[in-house]
Amino acid sequence: MTRDYVIIGAGPAGLQLAAFLEGDGADYIVLERGGGPGTFFERLPRHRRLISVNKVHTGYDDPELRLRMDWNSLLSDDPELLFSRYSRSYFPAADDMVRYLSDFANRTGARVCYGVDVTRVSRDEAGVFTVAGGDGQTWRARRLVVATGVSLPHVPDIPGIELAERYDTFDTDPESFTGQRVLILGRGNSAFETADSLMENAAVIHLVGSGSLRLAWQTHYVGHLRAVNNNFLDSYQLKSQNALLDGRVRSVRREEDGGFRVPVAFERVDEIVRELRYDRVIVATGFRFDASLFDATCTPELMIDDRFPATTPVGESVNVPGLYFAGTIMQGPTFKRATTGFIHGFRYSVRAQYRTLRQRYHGEAWPVTEVGADPGQAADAVIGRINRTSALWQQFGVLGDVLLMAPDGTLRYAEEVPTGHVHDAVRDGDFGPVRSYGVITLEYGADHDRVNPFDVSAGRKSQQDVMGLDGRYLHPVIRWYDNGGPAGEHHVTENLENEWDSEEVHRAPLHAFLAPRLVPSAVVTS
Image (tube, rainbow, N blue to C red; front, side, top):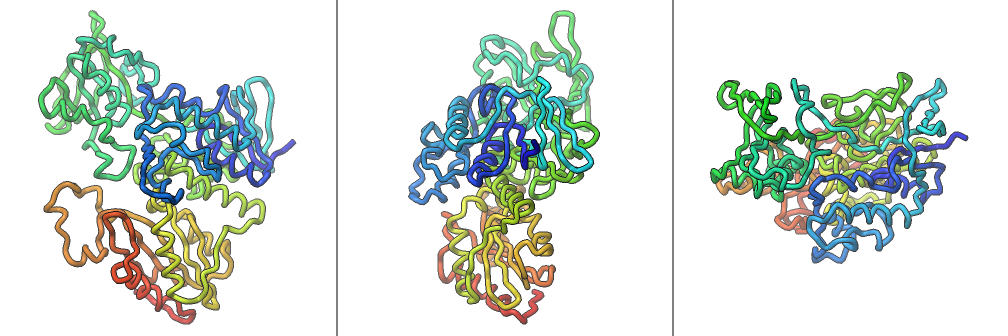
């Protein structure tokens, strides 16, 4: 039997795609190594607190707006499948996520085979994939979707690194670190989460990593250091025996007394090397994708130091047709620039992937709505969407709505298309005949990550800034294309509460931008 789809992994991404396919009555199966869904969250994060926001009280009745502040729920029409029904904590417990995913799988009817340890994936000359399990059972599929997450530790190539403890397996009991000197390799949230848990017991804690520390509140990338984990910085700057080392570990050497000698090349002082002594060394340098399942017939190309598969904007492998990736392993092309690595980002990217699959292989057009032919109606459609959408809000710059003008001047509106896919889709006729089109996104301003938002001098804007031409905060952007080339760009003025509904400040300038471009015979180049 050859299925249309086999999905490997019943984590959030695999279940999200399965729920969409189940709703269509599609021919698919999900294979999961664990005994239930979401087994990743049974052991990670190690200190059992998620850093994904669960804001129960938003003041909004609109479920779409509430999803802007809900980083844990998967997309579903079932009101019982909202994560806020499982926890009221702003940063919930990981065990709550396990319960949630179990219920999501059950209530959506996702067809999952548990206890399947996939050992090998191959692809024949006809393009059919064969997935082999450890017990000798096999599954065949025309399309394969891998949603296994980043399942392997990303361990740096340092002599002696094997002597260190690993974040995913070390003893998290703070008592075992009492009075000790501890070095943690890594400066992401897992490293700081670990340091925070040890501060009451360890004598000295050092975190080490190369380059400048990146803070999420400044970069707007939620994988950078979050405020919930940054107590360690306070203890460092107030001289409480803890320190952040900007440098590179040269090696890890064990001493006769059981401790470690670690030479560190400090970047602030021209790579001067100093040897430091520690009782414990922990590696918390992140995770990577495991590509060992694939044989030579379908080995996917990798990127970012081989941490992620190289994919197209819709999650297809760049070198293996029909092989797709869903979830956090879709983040390679937008690594550290978007939310694709997290549930509140990839749930929308998976929906876009699902729509692409239905279009490519089952003849279902990307859903569009008719707008009419009047620029005022077009402006209303854009304003209505940017004031409500959670997808463009969460996947800023990655997903965009598309305002499509047919040769006869009629307008249609497509939602949540991967921005890197829009031009190819228009060229290939995926939206039918198109004369020109506008891509609507929510974005932060240029160099937003270099501006300290708490520096009032940096916040003094020129009149041009105030009018939205160089807004630093999240705001709508409309880029127009004619004959495949750029034909204008408009930034809607940013707003403190993200309500772009002023006739004078928001709608009228947008209407003025759109009106000359919505004339079928017009060619606007600026």
